[in-house]
Length: 72
Image 1 (cartoon, rainbow, N blue to C red):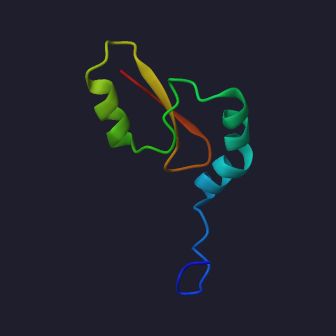
Image 2: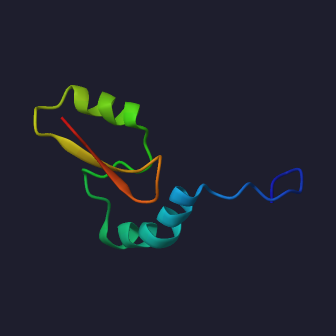
Image 3: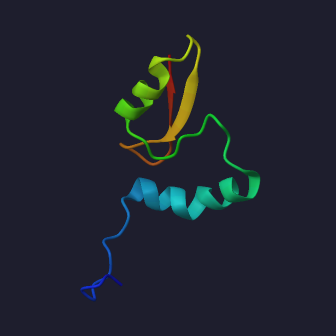
């Protein structure tokens, strides 16, 4: 409960899916260096800017349930 005595709003479906079905596996196996969680497309592009061609990262999609591949 929040300090006002209300429950926090529910997670968006894409994050609810990740928390309930994927996070446990990552905690058990460790987080691969190419996985960057729930970052935005813009943040992914910024991270890849200084990387060589062929670099990539995987992130939690902002538009649907699942993952997104960002690459340079």
